[in-house]
Amino acid sequence: MRHASLYEIFEDAIATQGWSDNSQRVVLQRYIENQQSEAAFDDHLLQHAREVNQEHIVSSDGLEGYMGWRDRDMVRIMLEYIENQKSDDSFAVFLRQCEWINGKTFKADNGRELTQSEHGFVSGNILIDVDDLVSRDLEGVMELFAEKLVGNELLSDISYDVVGVEDGQIVMRITGDIQHILASRAENDVDGSFSP
Image (cartoon, rainbow, N blue to C red):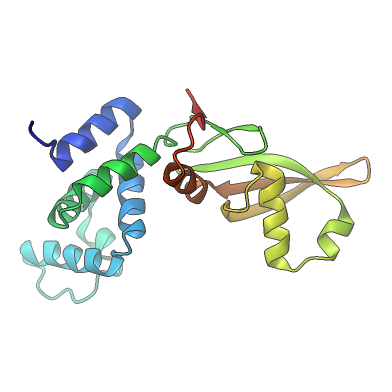
């Protein structure tokens, strides 16, 4: 039986998920970050720039804008880089974890159903007692926000806004990235996290 190429695996995911160029780019960026290979990818970008007679470029900082690369260009370059890493199996596993792109519903550990942004963030309102905030340091407050919004402290990149007061409690709008929650679920083979 023939093994599917990295490009075929990615095209299947695009067809199934309906990812835009920007969504494809976000998925590939996250994969490269998860592989902890950002420095090697920066070198790959420099090599691409030098191949089009830009030998004077010595840093990948700002390279994308300088070269005029768009999302579609970056997707092509990222796929070439990932293919060179010979990581088809881990890439396929990662893509299965990325079903959160394009507005699917995320079922949180506390039972809440939240709509995800195309970048894998969820938002929702929570109620907080002032006393709960005063007794915690910043990390403890972020953990409290994560626990109240999704029932899981793995929520990351948390932002918050006060939106009002209700029955003596603060109403807060919490937004956070669910990538680490999804990765944990994939590792533990938890099903039923999403609904179309």
